[in-house]
Each structure stands twice: as structure tokens, then as C-alpha cells.
Amino acid sequence: MPIFEKSSERSITRAIISEFAKDMEKFSDTDVIVIGGGPSGLVAARDLALKGVKVLIVERNNYLGGGFWIGGFLMNTITVRAPAQKILDEIGVKYRQFEKGLYVTPGPLACSKLIAAACEAGVSVLNMVSFDDIVLREKNRVGGAVINWTPVALLPRQISCVDPVALESKIVIDATGHDAMVVKKLEERGLIKTPGFGAMWIEKSEDAVVEHSGFAHPGLIVIGMAVSTTFGLPRMGPTFGSMLLSGRKGAQVAYEHLKGDKD
Amino acid sequence: MSTSRATKTELKRIDLYSSENPVASHLDGVREYLSSLFPTVEVEIRPCLLRATKSKIVDTLAGRLASARMRNPASRVQDFVPMYGEVEYEKRTIRGSATVGGVVYDASKVAAAAGSLLKSHDSLETASLVFTDRLVSTYSDDDMRHHLRTVVCGFPGVLSISGIYEAPARPREYYFAKRQLKAESAGDLALAELEQAFRDEFIDYGDPRAAEALKGLSLQAVMFHLSLEPFCGDSRCRLFNAHWQKDLIASQIVSGRLCDKHEEIVKKLSKKPVLSW
Image 1 (cartoon, each protein chain N blue to C red):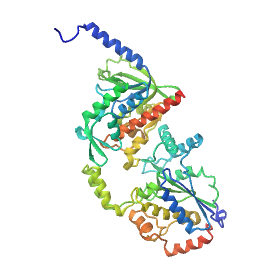
Image 2 (cartoon, rainbow over the protein chains, first blue to last red):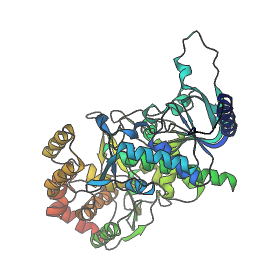
Image 3 (cartoon, each protein chain N blue to C red):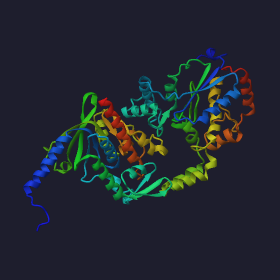
Image 4 (cartoon, rainbow over the protein chains, first blue to last red):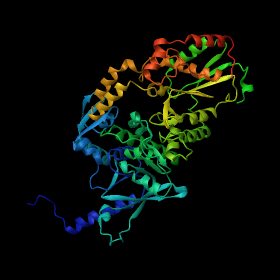
């Protein structure tokens, strides 16, 4: 007696293609595209999905979570400063207090729970897909993202005919970390000029990342470490509280904007 | 302004514009202090000038504040077109949905932005003191870099509340020890212990001494309005321009009074506060 039900290679292939094609059709026009599936992107996507917003995460790796799997120096203890532990409470991550206001938890636990929480909230994911360019609309408003399979970037230069596709959205969120890839595309076009590092008030930089999370350009919200690059805040150490709260702030700003569009 | 315009003008009002997140006792103390020194002058606490709800004011003010950002500590703030995101951030701070922090602003541009909102801007009978939680700086030609400021005298005068904690330097030993801890990747607890060890030597956030210091710092802004001479060289006088926290504490907390010379000047002004420039 076999363990599994009978099926065929043909059926399995059809199942993959038809379901993925359905998803791709759905993705082609969505409310919010989050570029980057690290902690800030996951929190933003989850918060929006819980409010009924159609959200797609575009992640260039095959795994979500970014640097949230590990803490500093490749050691997989995650540190979170109060009040960001409340987000860990929401997604059921156990942690312990290391010292007053500083909490620790294993990276694999926190990261896997956050990914699960985002997916369960209804967030769609395109992994192994890289952000290639921005879609610009009237008055240079960002209106979507051009994407391609990540392995395409690794093809020999002779193979240059693998064109990307474009997805439309009302808002794009740049959650690509220090690279700030979406912002950089605007900068390449001369549509934005970031101030560069060094002029910020270093003692308050973690707060400033959260407070500056929001629109950097019409149609484009920045969260996480992309905020640091965009607004010239200093780089920060391996603590994730501001990443989680920045994601939440970005989601709030996006939701208010979308609500305003509907009103 | 011409000299003839100012001469014989009598100060009749001092408007204290609250900071973005005011501590009630701060400005109450300043009002009482200034009222006691200038009994003929009406001293009033007014709402924050850098907060607004009307879209037109929010938009204009946000643009001006975003353009006032100090982007490079080693050069004067040039005219630049701020990023959309910087203007949006300022809109949130003006509406009160984002906390001020992490940004240093050029003091003269903040003063100009605030001044443009003042109806009394052209009247020297009113001294306007704009309190803010924003950090402000001025550029010095002496060492060609920006310096954080607590009081920036002018019309209006700008007083940075966060500047009380951040602008005057803490003891050198504190900075050495802090650098050492950072090099050792010490945690927040070790840094908190360091702050505790030096707690009497600087005024930190939440320190009740800030309210007392603010009184003397406000007087400096008023003295500028009256005489264009806000400071005194005596480190035990409340008009001493402190660049170190120890001097701030010595002049505003330990001494807490004016030197004999300024005691006399203020005594005369208390009867009739006439502008002398």
C-alpha cells in the first residue's frame, strides 16, 4: 500500500504553472509592492495585509528574513530594544530580558515566526526575483517595479535577451537595507538627491530611522536601513528594534495614503 | 533695523512660544523669572510656533525647515532643494505625528522660518522667544565648522531645549570613557553607568536643573533684544555664555544670579525697559 496518493509528473507541472500564473496575474496590479523581505519589509507587509491591503514582497534571495536570521558578527542572537519587543509579542516570539529595556531571542525563532506571520496575514511573495527598475507615472510618481529573475543577473553577458517584466502598484516600499536600491534608481535619474552620511545627530539615530520612515518621493516609501541611506543617518549596530518599528511606521503611512485615495 | 528706530522703544511684551513637546514647568518658570525682573512687561506663554494644522502653513513651514537642515558640519548651510521625503518628515513634525530628533538645523534659517509666522515680527515692543526641541547650530568662521547652540539671539530669539543637554560640552573624561566603552562594544547598561558616574557634571534629559538653566538662558535672549549685548564674561553670572556643561551649571545653577554689574543694569531696566541700541 503506497503512502502517497497517485499523481503524475504532468499534473504536478500543471499545478505549479497554473497556480504561479494565477499569482503572477494577481501581482501585476497590486496596492503595495515591498522590495526586500527583511525584518522591516516583513513587518510593513504584514501590517498592511492585516488591514486588507494587497501586498507583494519581492525578494531577491530564495529565503525571506534578510539579516534577521543572525545578529551581529554572524552570531544568531537577535537583540531588540523596548518598545519593539511588543511586535515579538504579537507574533508569538518568546524572548528574555538581557538588561533593562534590552531583549534577546534566537534569530531562527524570531525570523521564522515573522515570515510565517506575514504569510498568514495574506502577504504574497515573489522570491528569487530581483528589483530591476522603477515604473514612473505622471509627475514622476513611482507607480510600480520592474523585476526579473535573480539568476538572470548571473547569465553570461552574451545572453542579453532576458527582458524583465513590470508590476504596477499604488505604492512601492523600499526595504532593501543600506543599498536603498529603489531610491538609488531615482537618484540615477536625477529625481532625488540624497544628502549623504554624516550630518545627523548620532545619539538619536535609531529614533530618527523610525521617525523618518515614510514617503521619500511620491509613490515611494522608505523603511528600515534604506531610511538611513536616504536621509543620511549614521549606520547602526546590529539591533533590530528600529527595523521592526520602521516597518510598522511605513505601513501606517502607506495605509493612511491608500485610505485617502479611497476617500 | 536703524538705530533711530530702536532707541527709546520700550519693551512691553515678551512672548514665550512653547517647544514642540513642552514641559509645563519649564516655561512657567521662565515666565515667573522674567516677570520678576521686568514687572512692567507682560510675559505670556504662547502655543508652539513650529506646530500647525492649516495646510498652507504646514506646507510652507515644512519647506523652510527642510531647507534649514545642516547637511555638512564643515560648511555653511547653502541653499538647496530639500528632498520630498525631508519635507514630508517636517510636515509630520509640524502636525505632531512625528517626534523631532536626529536632525540638526541651521539656527538662522529656523529663526527666519519662525519669524515669518510672527505678527509682532516688526515690532520691537515685543520680544519673541521661540523655544524648540530641535537641535540648532551656527557656523563659525573661526574653526570653519558648525556648533550646536542653546540660545541663538535675534529677532526672534531661538532657544533649543535639547541644546541645553547637547550643546555645551560634557567633561573631557566623559568623552574619553565613552569612546573606550564603544570601542569595547559595551552595552547600554555600561553606558548608563557611565552617565550615572558623571551625572552631577552635566545636565541630561529629564534633569530638573534644565528648568532653572532655561531661566537664565531666556534672559540672555531678552538682553539681546534690549541691548544687543546678551552675554557676560563672568562665569558666575547668568548671562555667561557657557560652552561647557560645568560652566552652564556654575552660572545657572550654583550661582543662579547675575553679577553685580548686570544686577545693576537689570535693576534699571526693570523700571523702564527701554531698548538701548
